[in-house]
Length: 134
Image (cartoon, rainbow, N blue to C red):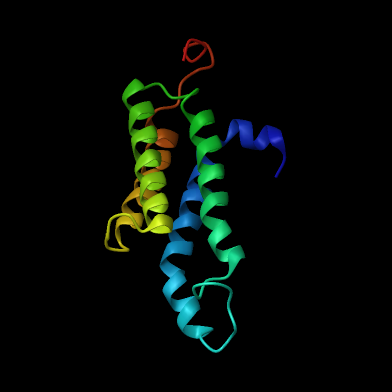
């Protein structure tokens, strides 16, 4: 995947990153059950698996940043950042264990980003001239 593809298809990258984040969240319990006999690091989670959270957050951040530059609807910008902030808050809370929340809360943030990227891709694209001021 080259840089020009990412610049021109930030919603596709966002869908991929958020979708992989969702799959990562869904598979986590099954991976740990399947590999319960393997020696893991720390509290039962491999460091590389924990690192995926941060990688997906970074990918989605850059995809959102690029997508809001080409959207025709200002309200989508706020929806993207609200969803991403919600996802960041849930992940930070999960890491620090501040407030006990159901695991399913993380699905809301990642699924909303997938839906927003699909919506933006389908209904909010504009010509390059109209997006120069965004």
